[in-house]
Length: 313
Length: 273
Image 1 (cartoon, chains in turn orange, yellow):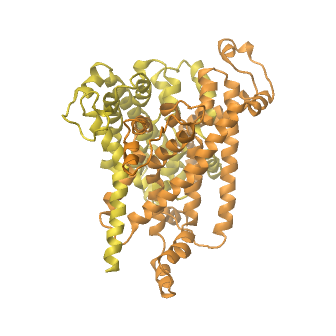
Image 2 (cartoon, rainbow over the protein chains, first blue to last red):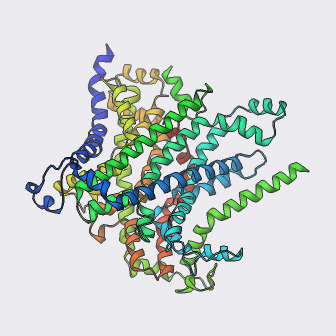
C-alpha cells in the first residue's frame, strides 16, 4: 500500500536530472544526426530558410575529403599506439606500486597520479616548451646520451609521437589506480599454489596475474579507447593540427568545420562517423572479453561492489 | 641477498618513475620563478639564478588573469552545487524509490555513457544560441548540471542504505523530501564529497565546451585564457609557466587534500562498465 503512494515523490526526484540530460544531452545527439543530413552553414544560422536537406551528401563529401582520412588515420594512430602504451605503463606502475617489498606506496601512488588531475591545457603549454628543439629539456636529456636533437613538434614524423608521450604521462595514473585495485583482489592463495608448482616470477605474472586481471583490462581498454578517440586539446594547443596536418584529429577537424567555418552539417557528419567508430571499437573489445572471461568465472571487481551486492540481494 | 637486490632495483624504478613524472611539473614551477629570458637560455637552466615573482604579478596586472581565475572558480563552484543537488536526488531515487520503468531508464542512461560529449555539441550550441545563452556563464554551466556518472555514483552508494532506516522515518511521518534532506544526504555524505571533487575538477579543467561557447575574453575560464595567451606570448616562457602554475595549482591542492574521496570515486566508477 505504501508502494503506490511513493510513485508521486519519486518522479520529482528524478525529473530534474532526466529533464536536463534529455534536453541538453540526448536531444542534441538526435538533432546532430538530423543536422548531418542538411547543408546547415553560416547562411542557415542567419536565416533558417536557407536550410536544405541533402541526404547523405555530407557523408559522401567526407569520404572523398583527403583531410578527413588524414584526421581519421592520425586519430587511429593515437588510439592504437597511445592507448596500449598507456595501459602498459599503467600496469607497470601498478605492479611497482603494489610490490610487496615497496616502501612508501601511498606516496608513489599519489605522485604517479598527480598528472591525471592537472589541467590538460596547462600541461600542454608546459610540454610545448619541453619539446622545444633548442632549449627544451627533452632534447637536452637526449643529448646527454648522445641522441637528437629532434624537432618534436616541427617534424611531421615526430609530432604525433610527442603528443602520445604527453598523453601517456598525463593519463597512466588513472588506469594504474584501477589496476592496483584489480591486483589487490587477486587471492594470495593462487600465487602460493603457483609457487608450490614451481612457477617463477614471470610464470606467476603470466599464469595468475594477467588472467585474473582480464575484466580489469576490458574496462580499462574501453574507457581509454573512448577517451583517446576524443583527442582535441593537445593538438589544439601544441600544434594546431600541424605540421602538415600530421596531428589533425577527428575532433579537431569537427571543431574547425563546425565552429570555425560554421559548416555545421559537415561537422555533425564528422561527429557521427567518430561515434560509429567508437561504437564499433567498444563492441569489438566486449567481444574479446567474452572470449577471455569465458575461461574463468570469478570476476575481480574493485571496492564498492559489496554494498551493491548486499543491497541487491 | 637476492631479496635485497630486488628491493634496490624496485625502489630505483619507483624513484626514477617519480622523477620522470614530476620533472615537467617541477620545471614549470622553476621556470615561472626565473628572471625573464632565463628559461630559453642555451644550455637550459634547471633552477632560477634568482627567484622572482614578477611573472605572477604580470598575470594579474598585464594580463588580467585574475578575472579568468574568478570565472573558473565561480563556474566550477556553481556547477558543483547544482550537480550535487540534481544528481543526488536522482541517484537516491534510482536506488531506493520505486517508479515505473526505473531499471529500464537507468540502463538507457548507462548506455548513454558511450556517447562522446562532442557528438551533440553542434546542436547544443545552436540551441543555446536560440536561448541567448551563448557567450554567457549560464551557457558554460548548462551541460554540466546533470551527469549520468554522477547519478550512477550516488545510486551505487545509496543502495547500501538499509531499507529499515528509511521505513522507520516514514512511520514517524517524515515526507520523502524531508527523508532525503535530513537522512539521505547525511548518509551519502562521503560519496557526495567524491562527486563534488570530480565535478569541480572536471569543470575547472574542461576546455572544449567553454572554448566553443564563450566569445568574450572577459568571460574566459583559465584554460581558455591560457590557450589563447600561449599563442600570443610564445616568447614569454616564464610568464606562460606562471599562468600554467596558476591554472594547475588549485586542482592539485584540492586533489592532495581530498585524494581519498577522489580515488574512491574511480573505484566505484570502475565496478561496472
